[in-house]
Length: 127
Image 1: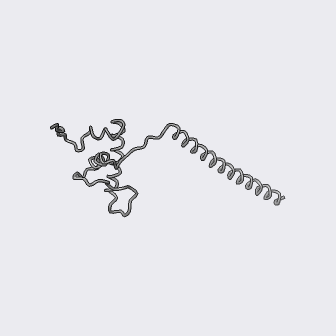
Image 2: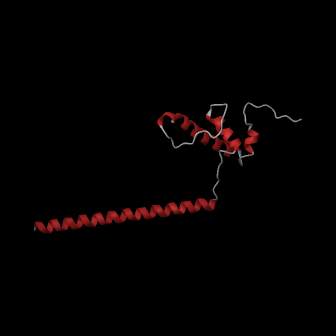
Image 3: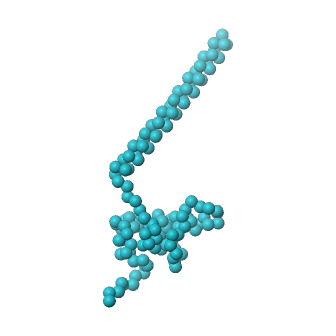
């Protein structure tokens, strides 16, 4: 019977690599989730937080071990957006920024016109 070699880490890295597309994705996903778990533990006494607590029961209290266990259990997942999706988001952000800039410019133009009108009426009433 084949037996898995004992490693220092449970779950083994090899099983975690089956859940993601690369080692770099695994590192990014686990580190981001470990930071969230750590933030959750740090904010426990401060009321309801915005960070979700650990999704698995773990024998280890270390945030990175908990994050790896969540990846192994399929609780921590990632989404890699398509380039078209990113381009659409960027275009929408640029349109919103242009619209906001147009509103600000319109408000500034109206304020300047109002100030000029007040100045003209003030100088004409002084005469």
